[in-house]
Length: 157
Image 1: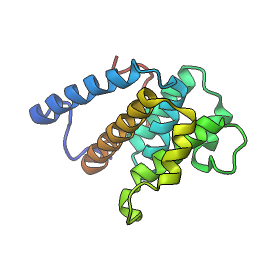
Image 2: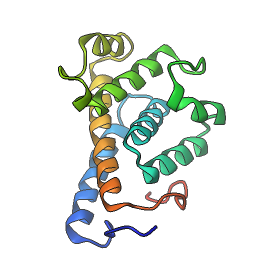
Image 3: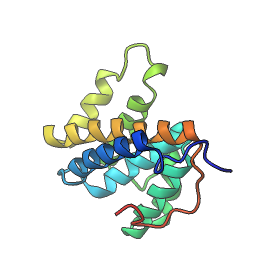
Image 4: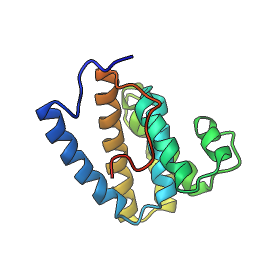
């Protein structure tokens, strides 16, 4: 499979990605736990069918010490016993925030309330920004059909 368009060789996309990476740095530097950040990126990428991001974030998470069991269970987090209640709340918010079109009223209040039980306002802000950011990356990569499988941890700095 070849990409329809090289996002790194296309001037507008390259500039846009540079700004997304800067936004991502703000989230990386937040108080939202790094493990939670990777779980959120993986789950949104799975839902969106973004092979490139799923490959990237599972490899980055493993490289950072995440267990294979937890990585294997992200798609089935509701039935898995390997996630904390806080992580489960973040994964639920991720699913609801990624599947906005599937719910007529947007993200349900009870989903937000569960996340707010575990994260303070700064962390919630970072979580919302992260969900928006990874969904943007997913959509770009799916549209241009960026191939998956060759990512190396730390490849993008």
